[in-house]
Image (cartoon, rainbow over all chains, first blue to last red; front, side, top):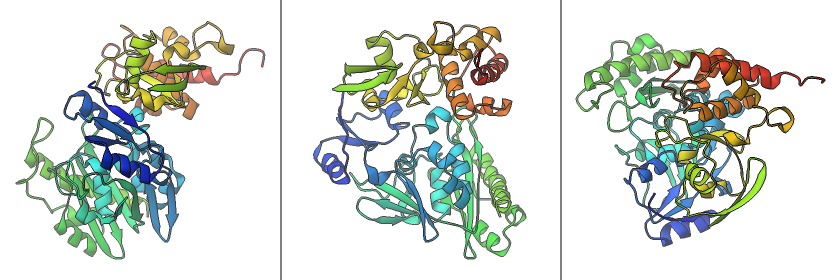
Length: 267
Length: 162
């Protein structure tokens, strides 16, 4: 690998100073995307700022019907957390389905959300659960956070500290996964809270998106049958060796039905 | 930069370039070549080692991250009571013909040891799920799964005389 400097701040203040002060520096969370990206020479940071020793970014807590997950919480910790399993089971099962055990032992929720890979699982849950992205500067609503292919509302040097998930009355996630990488070819997260339903799709297009027609139908009847006849347009969806746009459009409906069936099972 | 960690039960301090991967550190600097590098893209699992007791892919872990932690490689496994005999999981792979060319085996064994530490009596389905990140192109996995099940049982069997 091309050489780089390595810094390990232990406070948010120190982190911000490094990210702002060291030229061409990049934050390092679990490294499951960044390190392969550096190895492939798609990124060439002059310095990595390791976020693993900042206490404010760790831990899972619950207060006032909101589950807060620190950005550096690993997928394995979300998957195995009794608190997450009890409050928002879809998040635990989503985390348990990311990559493989060794990847889940390193990869973090904050890293996944900040990277906003078009096939990542977490963005669908963040959007469907109407989560708040808490950064070192502000709080960003999920609807304003994701901006398409690897793009988010984060400014240069802005770091996610935690994700705040309001607990839904029902919610489920289902994905059709690539058998090799276990990324979502199409993943759908559906959640209901106070009579409102949000349906978010990952994997299908260049970025996570909501399906208004499904949400309206599900507010009438929160059952798989309510979305069975609703098909999204394939116009802006992705085509690759795994699935063409037409097939992805079909999968959105299939995975939506499965997500709602999963949500009903947790009631 | 200087990093200190426990390697296979012994404290080590090494001076590394920050841009060093753990697989590279092990193989090139420390002459521990039991950890294999297959794909070098964190997919195949041949390079799996235990970092703080958990399975990780050493081709996608930076050496500076080791500072203050513990690392166990395939060379760090030992027989009952620290003997030179094979570790029960290695013995199970031997007895169940859990390898052919052997390239993936160090990663398979380390993943299996991590699984068993977390889940002492895994089912066949749990074993298969736990091996999702380890690719073998020879065996078809059947004997690897049999090996892990036998190895887990052996790791949990009371030592003779207990």
